[in-house]
Length: 276
Image (cartoon, rainbow, N blue to C red; front, top):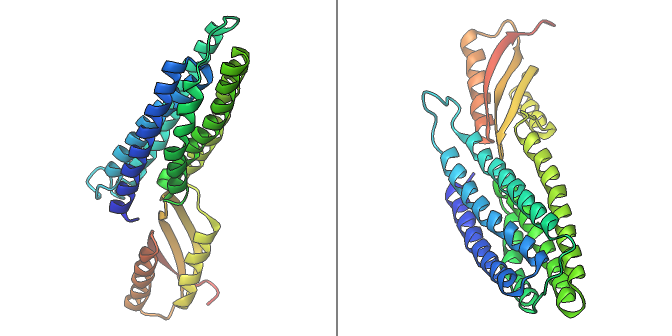
């Protein structure tokens, strides 16, 4: 993983997030739109979330020490968890506000749809960059995509609220809040998968292929994904009984080095082939 490049991408996302968030917040204040308020609230969480992702990513790049023998890679997941917490808080705040506003008429100004429209530009760029980037920021891209969807809904509903009735704007706010809860559930599922020690089939196939290239069979594989394309674990290979111990260890060391080049840090154990 190219950490300087990832940091630069995250910094760019922070700038785009702040610009879009400020525009939406201003629009929600001067225009009085509830739908743009939901939009603006998630924008604030969006900006804080990307700052947390940057913080945890830098901590995850720290080298191994006496307390983290495999390195600090998994600390980067703290960014995704922080993001879930922030959006859960926002979901609670906007839900309470909508409940308290039930049945109360309010006025929506045209400033709300205007500024919500302008905010689409920076968030559109953020989504495009995040989706094409590393997986450590892809979940952020998913939440930023919410901002685009929210922008479209808030523009239409706030415009309807200003031109026709506040009920249209209020309905848009309810829709946005419901979608936010849906995305929270989906991203929680992704975080659970990220920390569940999954071993993708393509990684298993790569290990077997490398072992076969050196003329040995794999008896057992235990590998787990740490983060991104980094995997740790151990494997057992079968060696012909007549092969000298030095040669067997040389094969094991060579396999370890080859797999490490591919981000798979494993300890290779040697067992004699029972078939022989």
